[in-house]
Image (cartoon, rainbow, N blue to C red; front, side, top):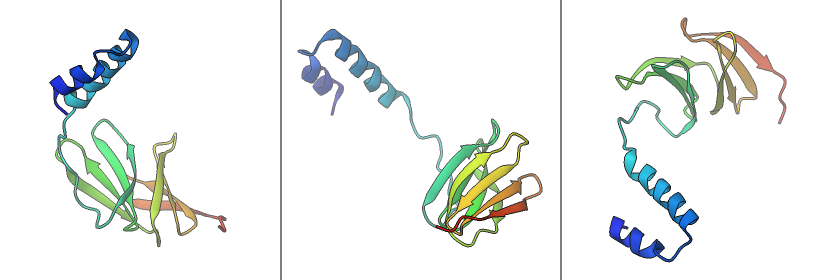
Length: 124
């Protein structure tokens, strides 16, 4: 849809709705892809910001990858889950928690690339 089509299509709408549509339209065209981070072998299940410069992703390839956002490079791969890694959370102490279909939650020291605890107990 072109800008002209959008304007033609909304000329009879109430002013409040027009403002919302124009704001939405502006956002759509304002953002563009900066880079694509490639490294997982199958779909990405979860993303979380670690620092201003790093991002963590989890995947059904059973790994967690730590990314340098500026360069787009994978700087670490955390391995240890035996099934899909579906969720990530940063804990108050700076460690990373990951939840998996292997029915565990793992706590990671990202700096050392090491699992420091595995929580078991989920049965379903």
